[in-house]
Length: 203
Ligand SMILES: [Zn+2]
Image (cartoon, rainbow, N blue to C red; front, side, top):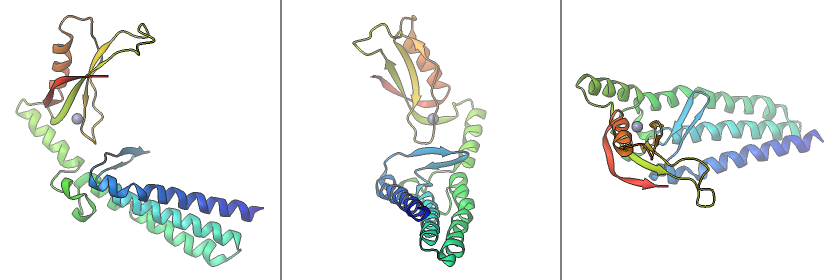
């Protein structure tokens, strides 16, 4: 019975790795991706190194599972451990891609000129020092209304939301019934960026 379990774990590990790798071409070309696993951020810039880590880790788990199933000590212990350690040893590279956008070849070509989060933080500081908002991210004003079949679920609001891939900034909600609601939402947006989109997106 444990043999079946370890084979199932192997298959699950490989299925997860394949699922992540399959997404790579789309993310490399521009599909947005942004997740945080604990403190480790995965975004478009660090997706390639993330996929390599996941591939090595899952291959290690798979070999360990097969090693258990067929009772092969080398597979179960040495080979699987080597792959898992190799995956873990890439974490500093992953952190470097996020922080400095280096090494370049790991970053999609259209993002290679961008700073990492360290450079972005410096940029924001410089911009603030000259009286400008910290970013030039495109910010969209969005009108959020309840669904037509539940019109009283909540009062309609405006919210300013940053559309940049690696930024989660969102303003407070402004009730639409407030006088000059749009101006208030735009003022919030102007505190984050000098690139506020002119139209309102209606949800
Ligand atoms: Zn932003």
